[in-house]
Image (cartoon, rainbow, N blue to C red; front, side):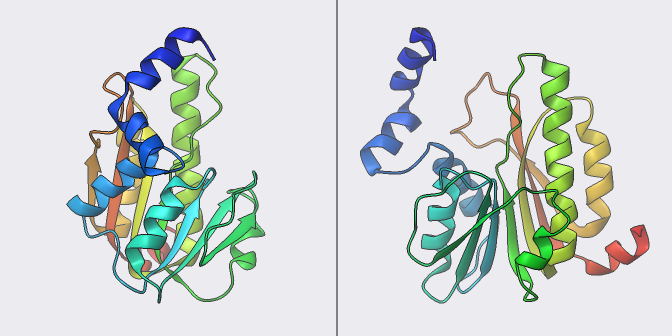
Length: 204
């Protein structure tokens, strides 16, 4: 990690706030913002957090849904234990993953997954879109009717096509860029509200 990046990160108010509040990443503020702007969570929800490591979104979800809720965190990397959270070591895109998550549907599916950055914008953008597609494909298998879906994607020319694919499956599909996203970052978030399971049958 370069010295300039370290210096800029230390000046970042969200990074400093995450350190001061004992949060695992500044990404927690992004989900916190989305949860206040959109009805992502309800008390007692069952939440699936994809690409959960290091656990920033997992903690926000766990604290927001209350003690009656359940969070399942999925990542190929280790996630430090969080009380009331089940961790599943696995890759999104593995056809066996849905079965490992059990038969009970989820109310919310989250994805803050990012590709390994290559430095080539078109490659990173395409990989980011592919990750969202993988997360959405899994959501179509495990999300209950009326459920919610939140996913990060790098903005670019492939996003309109991605949105067109997802839009019929939700009552409403919104885009948002939380203040905690760095100004120069191309990341944005897609928020699907009111999942329509019938759309899966039509598209299949």
